[in-house]
Image 1 (cartoon, rainbow, N blue to C red):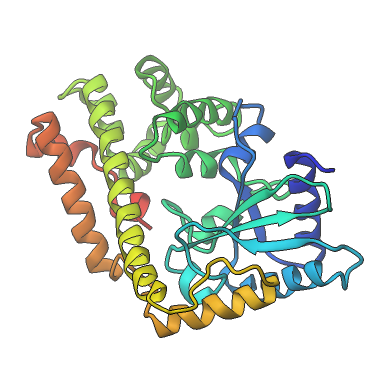
Image 2 (image 1 turned 180 degrees about the horizontal axis):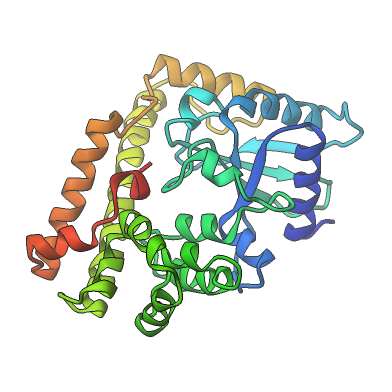
Amino acid sequence: MSSPIQFYRSFRNILAEQGIRHVLTSGMACVEYGIQQTTKDTDWVIDPGDLAALVSLLEELEAGLSGRNWRVSYRPLFGAPLQKAYLEHGWTSHLAIHDSADSPEHHLDFFGKPPRISVEGALSGSKHGVASRLVVAQMKKTDRDKDWPSVEALSLQAFRTDIPGALLHMRDPEVLTLSWKAINEEQKPRLIEKRPLLAELQEPVHGLPRCLAVERAIWEQTNKLRYRAFQHEWKDFLRRWRAEEDFAWPSGGSFFEQNRIVSEAVVKYKLPFDPLGGTNGRLLLYSEARRVVMNVFAASDDLMESVSPPLQEILV
């Protein structure tokens, strides 16, 4: 019986053997970096071009063609099938795997276009199949309180080798101020471009603690609205699918059969590829997120402009 860590490392090695471009991120990546996490799930970024190879691999692992005899199944969560057209637009696929008869159920989430970062950015700088600390920190900027201590811890670890990169994620006002003084002047404009809040360290106007609070709220609200858009489209799709007389999902069949069923269903019942609606949809969503935060904090237009992350950083 394999533990969650043993299983993920075994699965990582199998992906590497098959040449499937991948990287582990989120909670289990934090475990690898020595940051305490109470997670048993694993989150994987897969190059969208390799998703068909991943599906074939999972079918082989379940069929026992590789000497293994796994049980692979979709989980009853909202998400899309393991298809490039869906995952490259931000959907997630949720799977459960038993790698032996007595193993616990291992939960795996697959991304093709992870939230808050490009797939190229996620795959670059990885080591031993684990996303870099800065990539994990970016993905941890969610609307969940439990994720934000990891952002700070990862940035402090990254500070040892990449001070400029760490500055994009630091949250502690004192550490942030001291770190800003430690870098060359020529590096600062580019950092401010990626994280406008850093300009407050150049010429204080609004107060750093308030700026940090508003900035975090923008990340949180944007993620909340993004999640809600995908959830809404899934619920509408599932409502249409459930109207079938013999509806059952996930089915008790093989992964091959499950994948066929859900792949046919998303076509028949019109699950959209991109619930956010392209660049214009993302602009509207981000505008709404900032409007909400502005009202909550009674923030001025100037403050909002001073701390709002660029669209390409917060909503890739």
